[in-house]
Image 1 (cartoon, rainbow, N blue to C red):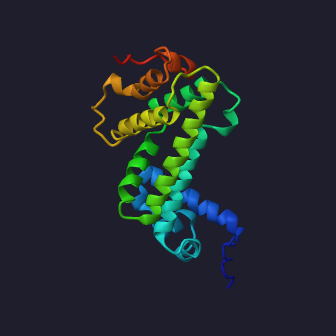
Image 2 (cartoon, helix red, strand yellow):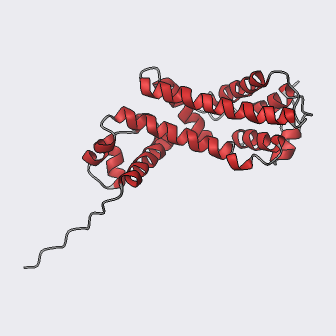
Length: 219
């Protein structure tokens, strides 16, 4: 009697395996929420034993923190690409805000809400949320400062302008889990028109530079 051959188990390099685990956990977080991340769930997704996941992340909370950091870092790299630093600052700001306004990052808005709520109870996640907020705030402030130096923006308070814009973005993001019947046109471009106001840009500038039709102006 011939026995059935066993499936070949592939041993991946540690760095590659860890990256795969974090990426899988980040996908689960984006699609279903951080609470859904468990060692067994990630193991099932990858077709491995939970003990392998536990080897890299003995505590599920550590994996939750890494998953959030991974997703938030990728978000910032897409919205404020380091490779775009040679472009005019106004175009970089337009890309950042129009992408957010057009709903392409709705899952990430939900993830931020999720992370901020859970961070009340998880010290590691709280530190990660703070670190990601600082990184985004710094990147946006540097973009605004470059725009001021280039004569494209006008403000005597770069950090204040960045905070004004980000608080508006976060405020709109608070509606990410809201009833979809809440659909007022003012919400669509609120962060864009806020940025234009605090940076002394003519209304419609960022939509025109970022693509798409202009939203309603704010008084």
